Length: 74
Image 1 (cartoon, rainbow, N blue to C red):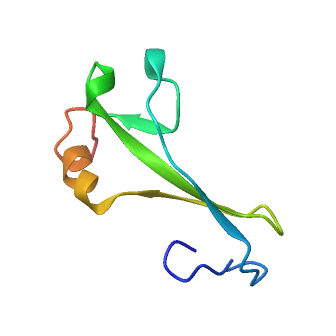
Image 2: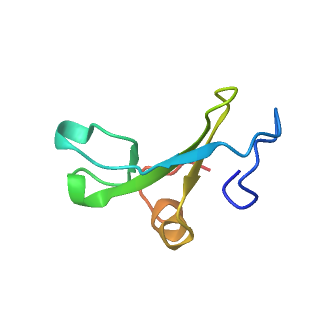
Protein backbone atom coordinates (compact mmCIF):
# COMPACT_ATOMS: atom_id res chain seq x y z
CA UNK A 1 0.00 0.00 0.00
CA UNK A 2 2.90 2.34 0.73
CA UNK A 3 4.13 2.29 -2.85
CA UNK A 4 1.12 1.25 -4.89
CA UNK A 5 -1.50 3.32 -3.01
CA UNK A 6 -3.86 0.36 -3.53
CA UNK A 7 -5.15 -2.00 -0.84
CA UNK A 8 -3.96 -5.58 -1.45
CA UNK A 9 -7.15 -6.96 0.15
CA UNK A 10 -9.98 -5.03 -1.50
CA UNK A 11 -8.15 -3.07 -4.25
CA UNK A 12 -9.44 0.28 -2.97
CA UNK A 13 -7.36 3.38 -3.59
CA UNK A 14 -8.72 5.10 -0.49
CA UNK A 15 -5.48 4.85 1.53
CA UNK A 16 -4.37 7.23 4.27
CA UNK A 17 -1.02 7.49 6.02
CA UNK A 18 -0.85 8.03 9.78
CA UNK A 19 2.59 9.22 10.81
CA UNK A 20 4.27 7.48 13.71
CA UNK A 21 5.33 9.52 16.70
CA UNK A 22 7.02 9.14 20.05
CA UNK A 23 5.21 10.67 22.99
CA UNK A 24 5.78 10.85 26.72
CA UNK A 25 6.59 7.59 28.49
CA UNK A 26 7.03 5.71 25.22
CA UNK A 27 3.51 6.30 23.96
CA UNK A 28 2.78 6.56 20.27
CA UNK A 29 3.49 4.33 17.32
CA UNK A 30 7.20 3.70 17.60
CA UNK A 31 9.94 1.20 18.35
CA UNK A 32 12.19 2.06 21.26
CA UNK A 33 15.84 1.24 20.49
CA UNK A 34 17.14 2.60 23.78
CA UNK A 35 15.94 3.88 27.12
CA UNK A 36 14.86 7.41 26.19
CA UNK A 37 12.36 9.01 23.83
CA UNK A 38 15.30 10.18 21.73
CA UNK A 39 15.98 6.57 20.75
CA UNK A 40 12.50 6.03 19.32
CA UNK A 41 12.02 5.04 15.69
CA UNK A 42 8.66 6.07 14.28
CA UNK A 43 6.41 3.46 12.68
CA UNK A 44 4.09 4.86 10.01
CA UNK A 45 0.73 3.24 9.32
CA UNK A 46 -1.07 2.94 6.03
CA UNK A 47 -4.79 2.32 6.43
CA UNK A 48 -7.38 1.33 3.82
CA UNK A 49 -10.47 3.39 4.53
CA UNK A 50 -12.65 0.91 2.62
CA UNK A 51 -11.91 -2.34 4.48
CA UNK A 52 -9.67 -1.38 7.41
CA UNK A 53 -6.59 -3.33 6.32
CA UNK A 54 -3.39 -1.77 7.69
CA UNK A 55 0.34 -1.96 7.05
CA UNK A 56 3.12 -0.56 9.21
CA UNK A 57 6.37 0.70 7.74
CA UNK A 58 9.62 2.03 9.17
CA UNK A 59 11.50 4.60 7.10
CA UNK A 60 14.48 3.10 5.31
CA UNK A 61 16.86 5.49 7.07
CA UNK A 62 15.82 4.07 10.47
CA UNK A 63 16.20 0.36 9.72
CA UNK A 64 19.92 0.36 10.57
CA UNK A 65 19.15 2.03 13.91
CA UNK A 66 16.82 -0.85 14.78
CA UNK A 67 19.22 -3.52 13.51
CA UNK A 68 22.04 -2.11 15.64
CA UNK A 69 19.87 -1.69 18.73
CA UNK A 70 20.84 -3.55 21.88
CA UNK A 71 17.16 -4.52 22.15
CA UNK A 72 17.16 -6.31 18.78
CA UNK A 73 17.14 -10.09 19.08
CA UNK A 74 18.26 -12.41 16.31
